[in-house]
Structure formats: structure tokens, C-alpha cells
Image 1 (cartoon, rainbow, N blue to C red):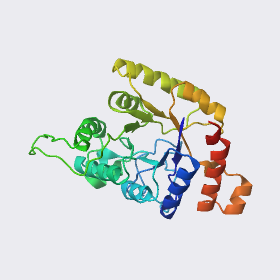
Image 2 (image 1 turned 120 degrees about the vertical axis):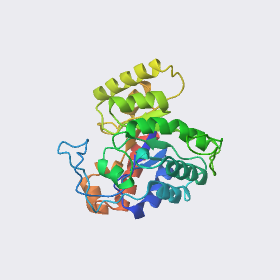
Image 3 (image 1 turned 90 degrees about the horizontal axis):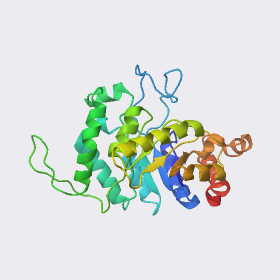
Image 4 (image 1 turned 45 degrees about the vertical axis):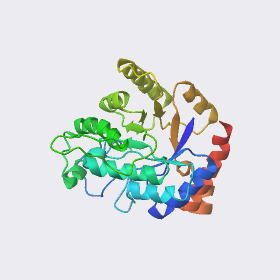
Length: 289
């Protein structure tokens, strides 16, 4: 079982130290989310009952790839992943070059967590079609893999082309999302799946069964990453049970479970609180796995 640190909503100036601490405490991957701006969104947010986002205009959304570059420069083993990068809100070559460069600079420590997104306003702002985003991502993933390999690629209307720099190893592509379309995309095109909702074990069992059926339909028999946030208190026994079901990793932000005493001592939202709760999680959970 690998532990991903869910560092979304952290202030930008905390990320470098969070990366150092995550590596020190045995986390496998640090993940952060992707948004371009805050507005009075008319598109309903799909992960809250009200349809409103869980953040406000003061919440930091630093550029994913710039931040990963900074964090990779102070670490040597920690991996990094967006959860998730909204690739179809950008053009193909912007995505290809950003991800490839981050992978090279990090020494092949980038996982490409990718999804279609929910916010139509972001697509409007970047001039991309919101309503075809799923089909475009399906077409984008195989071409990205070709470009990251350094091979020459032929695309309609363009001369034969390639990009540089490219990483020494293939970049794992993990598809995020909880919809039927996302699960199908993961099973057909991905090296794995990242859940966005926080699942109970019973809900997760249903998703795992669906994924197994879809993987069988596509003749997928190799390794397949399953990163699943779980609605349960951190417990080594629980994670061992999930691992036996095929879950390869889970996501945690230990400061979400900070005690009142910890909040009073370190200050809610502080870097010190995050590091202290990460250390406790490492001692109570990671070390026992």
C-alpha cells in the first residue's frame, strides 16, 4: 500500500517544506489539484450537495507543474502527481511539454493524474470546447505517450514532429474521476485510476468490481494502479484489507484529522500543524504497514 499526501488547499509557500516532510515520513506521492481561477461559477460543482465549491477566492491554486518542479528540486525519492490535471482545457502541446519537462527535471518522478474537469468557465477562458472534452482526452492520451517517448509523430495538418526533452522512463497515466465514463477511460487508456470521492468500503467494493469487469473487457492483465481515498479513520488493518482487494494506494491529508490540542498548539492551517500530523500519521499508520 502506497500513501499519497493530498496537499490541495495548502498555501503556495508551504509546498516545498511539505515535500521535504512527505519524503522524510515515507509518503510515496505528493498530489495537488489544478484550477485556473476562482469566480462565481455557474457550473455546479459535482462534489458538494449545494453545487458550490468547497473553497473561496483566497484559496491558493498554484500552477501544478511549476510547483512540482520546485518540490522535485529539494527531494530525491518522492513522486508527484496532479489530482487531477484538466488536460482538455489546454492544447495538446502545452500539456505534452509541461509534463515532459517536469518528468525530466524530477528524474522520472512524475505521475500524470488526468481528468476531464467539471468547470465549463475554465474551458471557455482557454478557448477549448467543454462539451467534447471527454472525446478529446481519449484522443490526447495515446498521442501524449508517443510525444513523451521522443518518437516522431504525425498529426493531421502538421509536418512530422517530436518534442524534447523527454523522460527516460514512461510517464504513468492515472485517470481520475468517479463517473462511468471515467472508469471506462481508466480501464481502456490508463495505467491506473484515482478516485475523487471519499468512499466507504462498501462503495469502493462496487467501484473495484466495475473496474475489474472493465479491465477484463479490454483484455488488461498487467499492473493497474488503484488510488482510493477512504471514508475511515486511518488504520493499518483497514489498509491491509484494501490492499488484499487490489487497492495499491490511498490518499490522506493528516491535518484534516488534527486534534483540538494540535490545532491550539500549532495553529489551524499552519505548516507546523501539517508537518506534526504527517509525522503522527507516519508513526501510527505508515510504519505499521
